[in-house]
Length: 150
Image 1 (tube, helix red, strand yellow):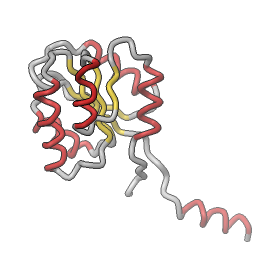
Image 2 (tube, one colour):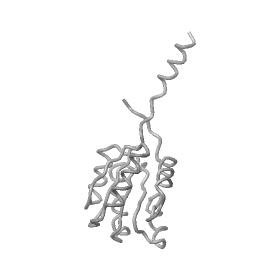
Image 3 (cartoon, one colour):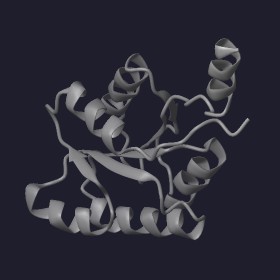
Image 4 (cartoon, helix red, strand yellow):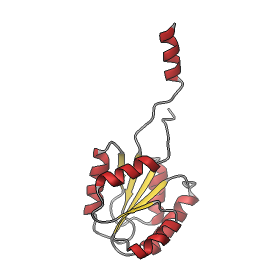
């Protein structure tokens, strides 16, 4: 009888699934080596990762986030266009009802721009030289908790 109670309790809690991360390169930034290295580091840490490739519009990024059912969007930018592109990306995510996603950024974002980036709703900026473990830990601690719906 005790084993049956344990099994019933286990069935009442759906299994959790890996954190799903979309890594995107917005705008005309053609340098994706760092993004590809981050994709590999996140996969090695146990995340499911979708990489969009280069030259993504804000609308393409938001559509991919919705289609891929991700928990986290990581924006990699080196072009200096973050203050122009990030607000459009955040608006496109909101338009699709994706306000609950964790959004983080990486690349060359000057310290002076970080308060504006944070005010847009981007939770963290990981600049060049950030240890992978720091980014992984932040994502694990801040990604919205979700379970399989199946």
